[in-house]
Image 1: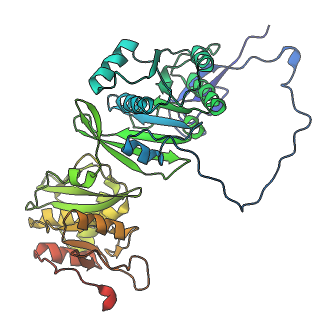
Image 2: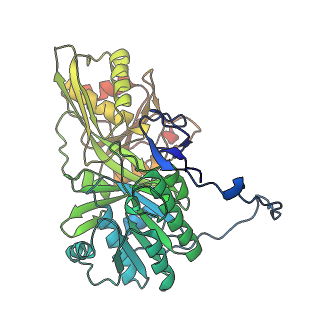
Image 3: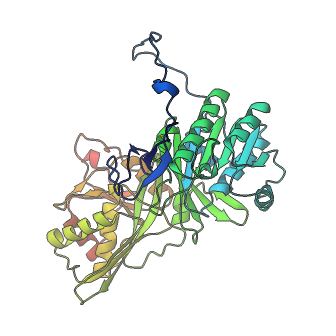
Length: 473
């Protein structure tokens, strides 16, 4: 009998290689190839059975409509918001996040809420015992919810149990890295086991019609551990982020086949678990002080939700010739670009200063619309003049210092007016273009065309007048 061969699989992308190498040729990652046993060959050199003929496909046109997928609400508004309105039957959701961030707490709360609503929910843990989960449920006040609880890591036992009982509405697996499939010669958490276990569970969810939630570990870089193919196999990918020393938690949608991506849900961690934050803007600005230089309020947009956050900048003299650039919650590359534009186009001397930039509240800002708010905070810190505390900022800055329009300006202005801000610094609106709607009542617009105008506005401490309707000019 021939000795079974060996192959190597990349832990980052799942690509196969006949021999080990330090670098994966498919994705370029280093030290990600793991050994796995090659599938046994069929006796007599037989090839896998090939289908001589197949069934004819029925092609259809692009016209026509289909009803929206049914939803099962978890009654947790922020969770349902990120999912697109609730759980879709026969869908698969992958939830990732740092250890201790609250993934298991969130899913246990969602499972208890759904079970109280009359749905059958199965919660299977491979990391904790039943007593540990009961202890957490007692702390969350969910001990009375009729959740079917079990602790197991064997996929065969899990599938047999799901097939034997009544059909569930939701199955939670915590976590996919602890599951293993019998007959595969590799340890739990390896690429082969994760991919095989996920495939078996996803196939059961699609045939059984229940929603499946998988908890995934993350790497030290913050990406979901395991092969990248795991994210392609599921329907929804959610990332739970935040600092464990901070009370805020952000549930961010990375992929959603049934709803919008880049949607966020905001939670606050307390002794009773995760509490929803219906108005995150007010929470992020609750501890803001308006008469301090280096602060500016950014009117951002996360998915379809406008969110106002505070941008904080601090400059410290560093005559040593090696200034430091420290950024929390924003792109360090864009900070370097803005510093270069402020020096070259506006004449500010920032090269010999350490620059510290922070997005208050633990939120991660990814959109270029934050350029104007960051620039305002830097100009305020450099001139030691506080920015207008009743003004919000949003807009993209180009390399020549010009300001450019960003999407959904009306939503940002409405959120600023709702929270009591009196003025908004925005890029100049193009005649006949988007964003020409009148600003909300009581909100004044300060349209900035170039970054030098912003320097003059903050350094001189000017406060523009009340709302003007530029369309009538």
